[in-house]
Amino acid sequence: MPATGHHRHHLDPRLLRAFLAVAEELHFTRAAARLYVAQQALSRDVRRLERELGAELFVRTTRQVTLTADGERLLPYARRALEAQDELLAAFGQARPLLVDLNSPGLATGRRVLHRARELAPDHELMARYESGLTYAAGELLAGRLDASFGRFAGLSPALRAGLDHQPVRYEPMAVVLPEDHPLAALEAVPLSALAGETVYAGAGNPRTPEWTDLARRLFEGRGIEVAPPAPLAVGDEEFQRIMAKTRNPILVVVDFPAMPATVLRPLMRPIPLSPVSLVWRKGLVHPGLDALRRAALELSVEEGWLRRPAEGWIPANDVDVMSTQY
Figure 1 (cartoon, rainbow, N blue to C red):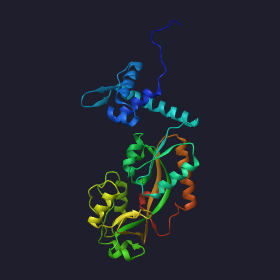
Figure 2 (cartoon, one colour):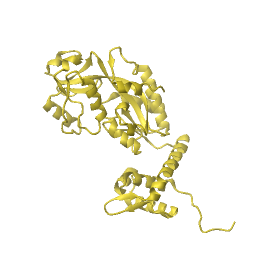
Figure 3 (cartoon, rainbow, N blue to C red):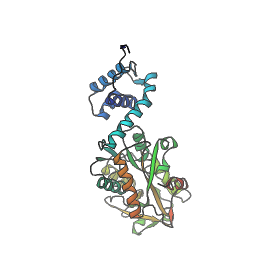
Figure 4 (cartoon, rainbow, N blue to C red):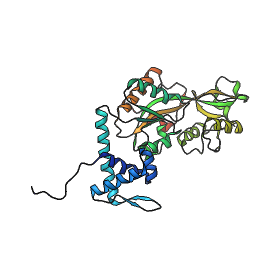
């Protein structure tokens, strides 16, 4: 064969990772931060990939970065190539850290699953993140910035659900947090009918947690209970507690919600409302840490009876099908 000037090099997967980060962020600074590299290094990698492929992948103006037609064409190939590389490394025990979102530090279900998974896979790094709500986390999962999260899968939009997989983990009994001098604070458990006429805070207006607010609306419907209007979005426990002390609204939570000063937590009853919790991850994700998480979730669900619904248990109709997925 006569030598041709066009000699195919092997493509460094790092260049594809650089391309993918910029394609998903459409912003060089954010993409560099996501990959923990200097922006100059990232720009250099993208230019090198463009040279090696003989194609311009991005249109860069001072205002924005957009994909060219060639960039759009490369996207699915780059994703497949990097997934194949991740699978290969996972098979040989060299997986990158798995990023697991536990919503917020006080919630026990995800934390217990993560701790068990770490025991099952001591050689793999499973790192906790706290993104507060499944709707927000779902976007991060699809963008590849997170690997797994926990929450109410049926509360996600179909567009988000289409790119995700889930495994039911728990029906978590719900409760209310009340100011300690609230008339209902004297009860051991609060019947739902006793909340008629109350305005209850359920994260309304928090763009990260609409799946939770939707659960509250379905629970309160026809029972004379209002969902409190959006409170200013409080960042951190201290701010949240300050805002709640000011509004004095009961707060809808789950039974293992961490204690707040000057409040009491009371389980709800008649019926017992349940918050359906799934482990959620990006479709096609292959990682030994994910295998460990799924096994841990299954073991705990069985040991703790987390997926047994009490006779008086209530979940929304649209969660029933989603949670009956058998694994």
